[in-house]
Image (cartoon, rainbow, N blue to C red; front, top):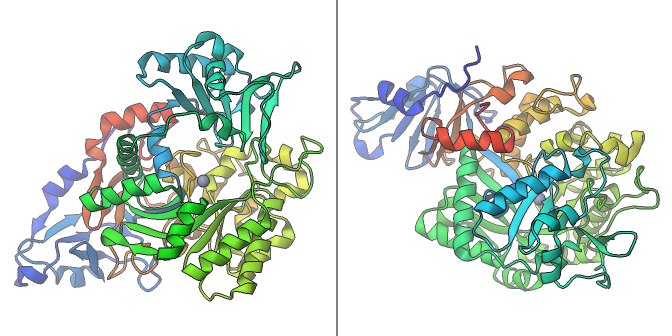
Length: 581
Ligand SMILES: [Zn+2]
């Protein structure tokens, strides 16, 4: 039975059933916590379905039989009987933008707006409540509107003539600016397009307000930067959002010096309740400094790693910025945009290898992916490295001949299952019936022997781990459509999907020895949910309630105390983890 609005209180339940065991064990080496009575999926092949586990000083110390776990009970041990709930390792989102998520929570949300008029209406309502000089928003998608054409700024400028407005497209690869924003940014009909960017003009040669890929910078550089205080607030909000979704570790898929300073400060003050694997942005000064000093691993009790570089080689499919080998099927002559030449990727990779850093490069189109694979291959040939774990972020559209190259070169495709369900309405139009078969090709890749770390790319997609698991096993949207799944032959198994959200994510970030499974010696990061993802039908996955999230043995999220926050978010974001209100 589906009980809408019913909130299972883990706090009350644990208070009722938690017992202190009066064992003889001395308190100094006794467990702090013993978890029993749950269906536990450890994602550890040595003991995939343990009966119980014991935790001490933030780590699993025993994972196995109930009897073995109880042997660690002492006078102060809390025993949590989860009476049939399911426990998974803390989930890992391998590609997410933490600051983006946090700042986004403070912007006007334009996702699922059905028309441009709705975008304008929502922005106007937001303007009435926002104290900020610049009005920022995101999530619009012209593919959802009648006609599907890019918007123009006129109606927005008419209602907001004196406040700058910048509204970013759902994929983050295009924006709509109003007249005031363009004026403050110094844009007019004579403004030149930067390489790898496009300014859309009307028939009279005036900018329409739409700026694509590198041209977005012309507007974005006029927006005042977020202050450290704003970033701190953003990070705290984003971490809360991760906990709601059972996420305890992330790959931060591009970080700057200012973001890193905020994360460091939070680590020092004990506020960094998330295991962050930061990928340095492709900025010469930042890379120069880090390549000179070398990587940083597991700072603040394994809360912060800095040992990767994030590059971009092309744009996105939605805005036709992804670099394709042959022109778009729905835009003859356009092969998309290459944002960085192969030589640049290769050179950064060589320096990364020399300094002990991992390379992670965004590639969406089949040409973008080939450029990155070629660059990686050249760098690795010049500097053979045993355990490089170079990653391609997204690996979204692949030429069939490039699919086996990942396994051959030891390159990890870091993919985001929910991009498939967000793009499926129009991906075939962009790519055509043949090329689309190499898109979001999880099965084809897995069959070559690679692993796929999964993620959301939030805020591009919501930080919703339910959607990730469901899309991975069903290739269906939240409403279980299309009924047969979109190119269902590319689905992951449940087991693979769970690994992609746990141990494969740990491996993709060199953290498989400390997180990613419930195993003795690892950090006690785990999530409690009300149903078993490995047993329920796919249609029920989106109904899952995340009940509690634990990081290092401490409870960082309790659904029972999160009612009002989640209610408002659920309606804003079209449903979030554990809520169907
Ligand atoms: Zn990203």
